[in-house]
Image (cartoon, rainbow, N blue to C red):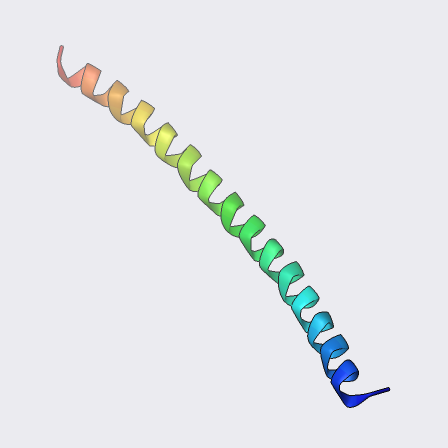
Length: 56
């Protein structure tokens, strides 16, 4: 196999692996952000309840 072609094929494989890993990482970060968002929403509700109790 020609050296140039071999290099291109190897580079293509590396890029493919990088894209797979990047998608996996983005999915993990997206999940973590969703968990944080849900936690913040829950804290807002709890804080609202506490404020309503203090205004009696």
